[in-house]
Length: 606
Image 1 (cartoon, helix red, strand yellow):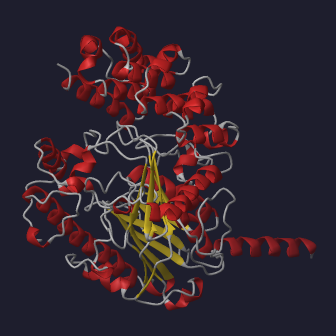
Image 2 (cartoon, helix red, strand yellow; image 1 turned 180 degrees about the horizontal axis):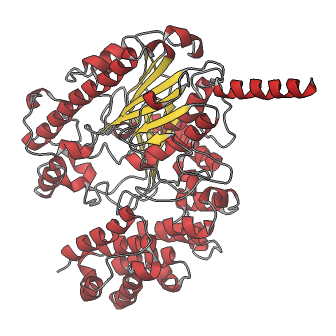
């Protein structure tokens, strides 16, 4: 009898595992490089009938930020449920790992019985976790589909459409359907035929994507699943046009987010949910993972840094959402941004670099090319010129009065209370998430060793000093920072001297043990120091530009510094030409950045 009871209990447990309590299906329809260019978000040019129809039965989020204004870091935010600056994964592109015990959120769904499919882009800056292939996704390919699940199994399915990607704006030949005369040109772009063509082609691609999204919705309905499935639609970051993509302004971070609940699962929505309505609740990509887990009835992991905005475990409305920018392909920068839905604050930690650093991929777009040409010819107005100049340390914009974010209010006394509040929000987030993006990129990996940068960041007691030095303005504190025992503090003290064009204190740092510190010192000495010291600075930079000797990240930093020396780097042109173009073991994308930047440096030398 006892044996029969035991076997009956085991069988019941197995049945419960195979046929879990009914849970909602969750479908994500996503696209790339698109701000809210949809009719349902008030865009009068957009021709998007299928998504407009979905929105008429759903809730629109009018303040949704992608956190990162470029694909790999944005997608890393989503899949991890964490800010990439806390993972050492903010750069475009990089490869690192999550912390001990952390998992990509589809793995948590899969372990709870969901069928997880991704069709098909991943592009994460972090390695897959788990101990066997496919642990995150049941299938991740251009064949992946919910139709491959077991009968009755709940699913989480992603379909991503690439037609709206930046690269598709510049595909030629292209017969325009959208009249270029009807598109709106933002205040920061010049109004030229090239720019109008690019914007019009973008709208053509958005229309195509709308039809692709509609086909997925048709499949859902044909399979009899529409009444069982919660549907999300969003883009992976803002428009692919220059000064939107790659920049953590509202123009680069704001995306359309539409969430549809069928009547069966309406109880999982929040009180603000009404079909056809909109909410100004600030949400962002770091919130998506905890939100999906909440909808599935699963607990939020302690390491998730966002807030569930739907489901049984929905959390209170948060006052701000945040953005970030690190290295973009071959060019280094560090920017953090904040919005409450009306005001946008940016902190430029490298204001000595111009906005439009030469990123080879970005310069393939006709708009970028004609924009630079007109700047060099002196044919741009003040708003259009700014992209080609160095940056203020802080920026503050009022979206109600200035949707294109061209009138910086940071210096206006009447805005001081708002500026202080948003500056504090940015600094508080950096402390809360332990933002290790302030480390030189090579040190992110070196300090982690065989472990994870996230875990190393938890143990980094000097991190508050590093954050503080990155914004320091006091001359005495900057001088003291050059002798700090932590190399990242010395690095930021050196950067602040570079910003102030103060070379003399950095001469001793040409021999600093940290490569990143030597690089900043050499650039400063080379640009602003005595002519007699130029040779020593160039010797440091040429040596560190060898990626076979020093790795990809150090080489990229050194080449960026050399590029900013302009003609002063001419004496080492032959040595630069002899540098290796390949680095075994580095991810393919990273290997491409060094030779690409090296060619840019060489082209600019006499």
